[in-house]
Length: 181
Image 1 (cartoon, helix red, strand yellow):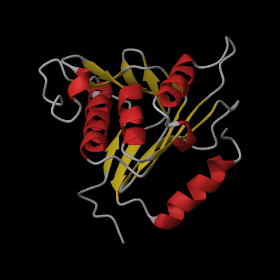
Image 2 (image 1 turned 30 degrees about the vertical axis):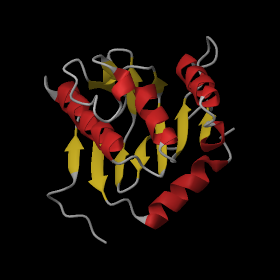
Image 3 (image 1 turned 120 degrees about the horizontal axis):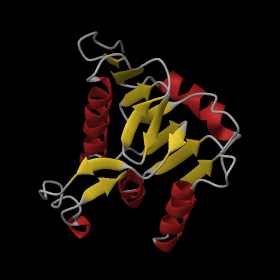
Image 4 (image 1 turned 60 degrees about the vertical axis):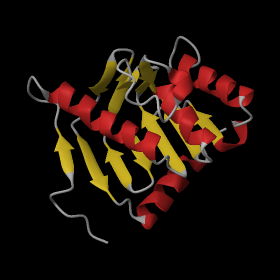
């Protein structure tokens, strides 16, 4: 199935609104994951902090997850929701010199507390062979960082495409399979 050019979106790092455009794109993807969690979600980011995914201070997402309350929803909250709804999550980030990634450690602990560890796989390789966010029906390819203050560019640009092709997902899965624990 070919992707309509109107549906494909590229966000480049140049210009004053670029980071805002990247944040808006990721917000839309995270919101989609709340409404219809992926059965298989891969997050591969050069930097991974538990920064904001969605602003729920007005309570707009409380109907989907009442326990969250009126607060900023973090990346780990969205990933745990995918797990709670039966999805499998692979989360990868580059290894840091100062020790293990705290978000991945916290995510593993929270998954274990909720009996969800079997569907969570994580890795911290020296380098990422690919980067992006890949879920059911979409790909967000490109190198980005999920910083404490929100997403930022870590490469040339980010491309959003709906309808992730099955062969593309299979290749990606094979690329990451040997890195995950």
